[in-house]
Image (cartoon, rainbow, N blue to C red; front, side, top):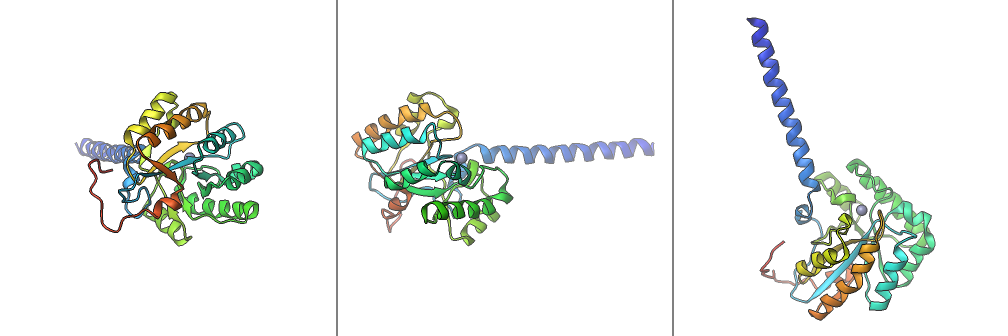
Length: 248
Ligand SMILES: [Zn+2]
């Protein structure tokens, strides 16, 4: 009898542990289910403004196959963007990094190796800043964690290093490679004044992003939008809060 009770207790305990593990897994999964976390307080993911300005951001480069084409489109359209580069890729492609900078785009920090381990985020931020300082004699202000994964300790660590944790408010979902027309739609349908747009110039194949980029710029310009870097966007921050019909 005692053995049965014990094993029942054990069973309940096992169920409880399993439940907690599943809860933990689902919380983790939710963290990855973007862009809801982009709303996290203390991060920069939009500015409150009535001005029709947007910031285009590109993650995971510089990439020898794709960054050049992205830069060509931006040059043709006369748009300045922000590149959240990986230190590792900057080291491997210093000429491309210099080209990004020389063509007037903003360089920002996306860590070194795209590790998803939060305890590595701040050390990788520092390492990438050292690499960028060596290659460009520049230090970055804006840091975006891989996968947009954040926690209070990451937020505090990034702040302590003098960086602004920067996310996004308009997800192109180009990381799913859903086809250029879907990427265009994801951006154009969800844009609003003061938004930060997430795109990629590295990490995987980016032909779809490159094909979508020109039409994204054209369609948003037709709607009266202009583009700036994440630094420039901040200049449009309105003093009084703006009422949005579609808050995000
Ligand atoms: Zn990334």
